[in-house]
Length: 629
View (tube, rainbow, N blue to C red):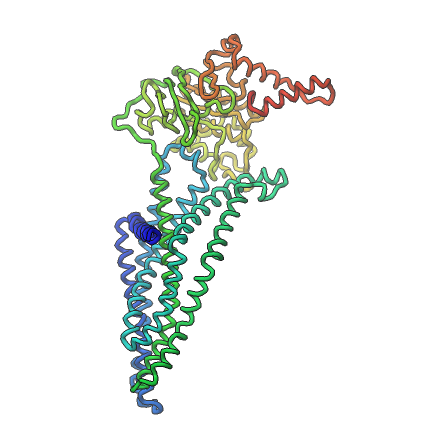
């Protein structure tokens, strides 16, 4: 009883999902209802040729063997042709309606999901892989498009077909009608067994497995260079390999262990529906007074039984489509439920470009320990403040709180004396330019990639920003210069070169506040020199006024001239001050600086005492652990 209730609840959810899905179609949902109605009428009309065949068979049997007496055969033939053409026309018109609604529904679903993601907190994308989001936004919309355009009108037609079949089964000869119902009943029982209970659970796990495989597949493709460098195979990328194995086992287990027997039985009985008529006819013939009429009825049911496999197959696909739609709409609604950056009711404008962290604590979702724990420091307007410390200390987390990639768990982050949560998000984004260690170029020209920071910028302004970011050598080697489309014809750039283009974006934006996160992470010595020169230009606006700069750095050479250095360790402020003050304090920063100086002078040699080699090995281990880098 409890299992039956659970199945009913699942069916209710599947049915309700269609209503939630149609809500995306807006006014065009009416076309879906019209298309389903036309498909149902088309299916009823398609029974016309079978009825005409019965009339023709009746007349022929009645006058046999004098076939010329059957004068109405041609009329029945024309009526059958008319019914067939009308059925096709009605079905075509119905599909036109449902396709118009389906395209609008899929389009609105993609637009709403994409628009919502545009307003979602940027930190959301750190926890949700791009492959999984693409699968939800694009893949789920594609699946629902097939449901609304084809499966839903086919479902309406199947329901009409079943109702029409039941009526025709009992109009001519109820005994032969019951015989035709036997395979229908057996097939429905098999479908309920496959689709109910475990079948519903399988569809949910099937969709989850597809999303997981899509996500890990995207990560694998991006990691192919690493796999090839180390001469590995797909088995080395454990996550992708396990996702494929999980999907394979899941599909095979469901198909072989759960569906093999009932599916085989269902296909067998519906394909041989005419066989069930034979024993009934044998038993019924001795008691028949009008053998000719009974023969005509038998011929009708034998021919009409060919419709049964079509009807039952549509019912089976209908159930699968409803399950897929339920899962798809749930996933899209999950994306639409992602937290967004809420605009305050009465936004306040910052008074200046200073930044203040006031007793800030922040914990990532699902984490046990806070990433930041009661952190407080100031970044005066026009000053450059650097965040340094061991890996995992909370530097990137602190920097991401300024442009509201995340909202603090406790305390406040203020810009110009105003809590960032009270600033209009558009205003806040307009005041802050950021350059991160992981950057992405679009498949557009270099000009448009840089212009993304300020779409209304002129070509000369973009070129000036590229020159200020020391990108002249990059443009010289590109075949079409600034008009070269990135990623085409083997046009690719190194990590350091991409960083300089990102700095050009920030320079072009001309925002009063700049957040730099590991901006020299992928730079070789030559690129680092040019990036440092670009930093100097970025630190001042076009009118020469100093910008407020908050920079995260692991290379201590980039921060020694900062106005203030804040050392973060395990989510807390360990110390803060200028380079000279921190060295004099002989604390964590002083130890990091000493390690940095040793690493700069470190060389690999083939000779030396065991003690020297041990010391070099210890320094190399320290570098690997990130205490210096």
